[in-house]
Image (cartoon, rainbow, N blue to C red; front, side, top):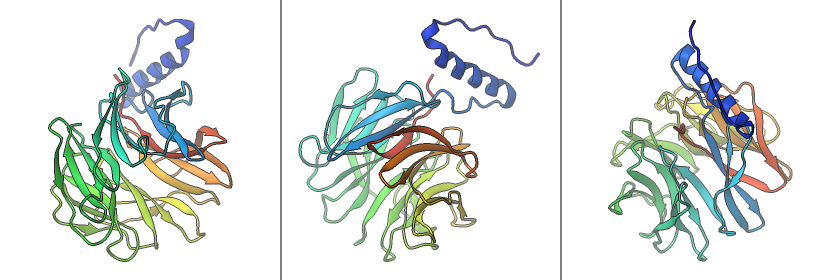
Length: 303
């Protein structure tokens, strides 16, 4: 006997029990709980009005998280799943909010002049990366959340955006057009040792670092003039194209196990949220609707 356990739940909790069973079996077999007990947040957009929703890993339990009815972008989960950070134009200009998902309370954490764009939480949940234009052009900063202490990381005449941490918190991946087109770069967590890692393609954006630390996934303009999903290692070696069809594939985000990737697939007016294996195989539809869907973000595991 490898695994035995008894489960008891109300009839309306069948989906949750199924995810718990799958998670426990994975843990018993390979010592990894998998991605079953997770959610994907995304932005649903109708005209200029949008809000953040979340859906379970199996496509059940869709729920509306915000009620801003304004432009909202870049939802980002805290590692413990208790907080969601995002940029909202609720008050007419881009400001960064932090929402407590248990209480529903929201607080505004930055409201500088110009652009305030939300980046990723640090692996320990104590800091958050931001893109701000308060000092001129778009630069990357890190904010200590409790003390609201801000430190600037990039200092370049170009645009620097879309920062994301490595899983050990030692490095940051980001996008810069300092070479003349948007490309992927890495740097130390303090802003030093900047290194360009993408050279193929004229437009590469939206990088996300695997929880396993071995690959960075991103969207890039492919040969068919559609945005597709690619991955590459942190040194800029072994680039691999993961998607190939005629739909635009955007905003990839890793699952906590590092085994799967979620992204948006857009073709004509239809947009879908799709999950695939990290090598590009077995894409499956998670959620679709007639409204425009953008920027999916995968949570950590819920306990």
